[in-house]
Length: 82
Length: 224
Figure 1 (cartoon, chains in turn red, brown):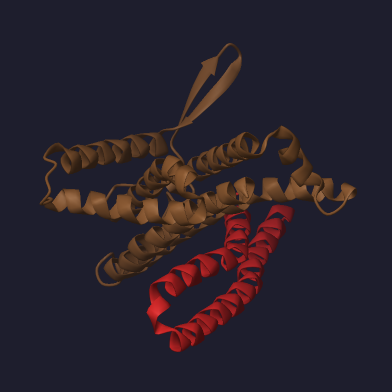
Figure 2 (cartoon, rainbow over the protein chains, first blue to last red):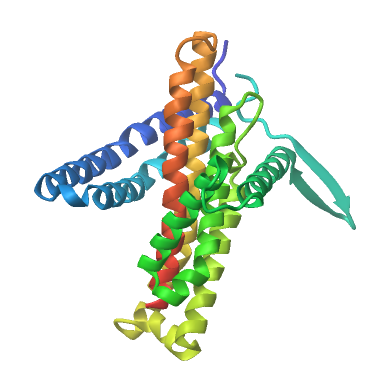
């Protein structure tokens, strides 16, 4: 079976999707971990405000997650559209 | 597995142009609206000092979101915008949770729904900004630190819409794809219930809350 140009393009798209997801997941992982650790420290210092802190932590984590979600969208585009 | 990237579309020709309707999100959105109407009817029909079980859930939503929006905006404006915020949260919550049921798809899985809700929030935030501060103050806020920062501020405002809607869309779409792939691998027996508990119920509730809170924060940024 001869390898044609479209096969190469598809292989490159699959590789790009994997790379995009793998590299793009580093930043949100580190960021969410930092947010969680700081929230744990704050709850340890001030347990009365645990509800407010948890709410703020979840919103912050969801915001810092968005770059990972962009990577996911790019990966889906590469998988299904290219 | 074959229907992973497939979308059912209805294409209507109209004076030489084509109108495309994505059927699934439209039907699912109407189902969500009907569920919400039934919920509202049940919650408010037999109003009593001693509330019934549905009325308790309704009062829970109302209390939480009135408190949140009165914290973010001030007292009068908060009471004015709280119904919008509550309705947005309840719609998104039911829209994300409807994916639990078999043969149901979340309307937020299609990019059109989050994008239209994001644009709605954007328009409401800027309308509120113009009405509260006056047009002159509103325009001045674009030239804030120095004059030539105007393009950056403009792009920043537009990027808010993209980020808020793509976040919701990507989370729901990614979760449903993971559930689909794992159900295909394990014959839908063991793992999918746990995955649905995490990706649909937990992530769906968190993302609905985040979308609502960010819309509220955008309105609050425009007001102050």
